Length: 207
Image 1 (cartoon, rainbow, N blue to C red):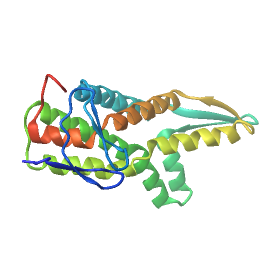
Image 2: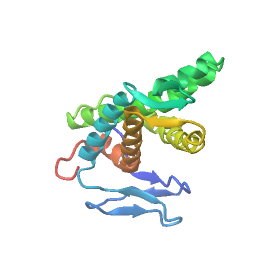
Image 3: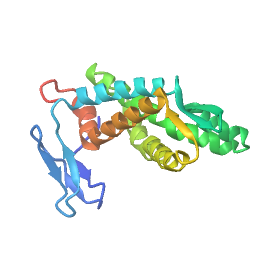
């Protein structure tokens, strides 16, 4: 059983007594003012909804064209997974693998683990390995770079649009919406609340 008697501030590492919050209350670090936790209404349902939506959008973003280039009559099309595959054929094999892992595999794994964690908590089934899954989720977060990749695509578009005619495909918009949903999941992810669920179980009236 996990005992959340103390919680450390993520910003300054100050060790604090575990906060007891009412719905919509927010606990702040008394030393640096960093947010420790916020008890949101229907947090578990929101995480589930945005997580499932994000996985669907990520799957769709790999099924269609990301964008189409028309340069002097030469038309070429690229998909999301081809952005990494092209690096492989350009002899950047290690880089292509890293790119695909960071922009597709790790974000999908993070969301899948969050949904799996929530499902087990809802079913009141808490195996010993569940605490390791929670540690893995927070350990993978810095390596999920979907939004970084998308910002890079937007920056590249500014230059490419001046040298070629471009059409954005369905995958572009699906991945853009995926990044929005993924960012929303990260904004809702509360380390203290998740550990509290692991300790106390699922409270239907507040989560």
